[in-house]
Image (cartoon, rainbow, N blue to C red; front, top):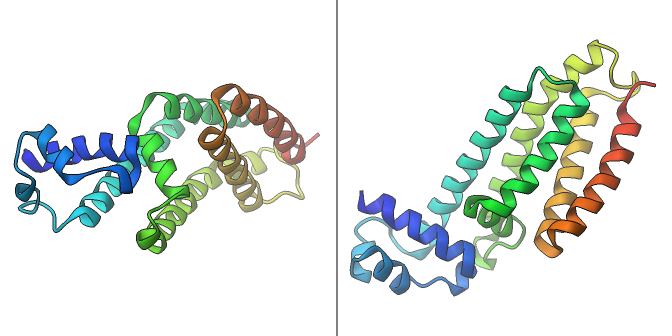
Length: 193
């Protein structure tokens, strides 16, 4: 129970203050334990941070899998466009999403390699989940015959990445504007006329 509470509080601190700004003393005080007690559960700040990062990534993947499962019967265009907008709303509402994306793009320097590798595997997994939908759409003649399912999936991940960057650097309105423009060009490029 205490380990879960530490992770929950640490998520809020890391999401708000980043790795450098989050303090084990502040986390332990909010949990209601002494700072030394954190070491009964985690070797140190790095292990706590990486655990919280992986937890957040797992919850992000559960969101993605859930969305794709619930919307799998929608037309491809509606499903993909809805996915982008759902993820944008999730960024506004969830500490998990803000923390995961912030750290995936701006990891602590000494943990960069591990975070980037984990984040890339995360994106690859999203691409594989989407690829099945693109394969189905290709068989149904929905996407252009010169666009493979793999290419459509990778390009969609690029649109998603662009939205993430705009959410991190910009604001909701500019992200929505750029997302809609990117979406129109992307969909026009892959659809079968």
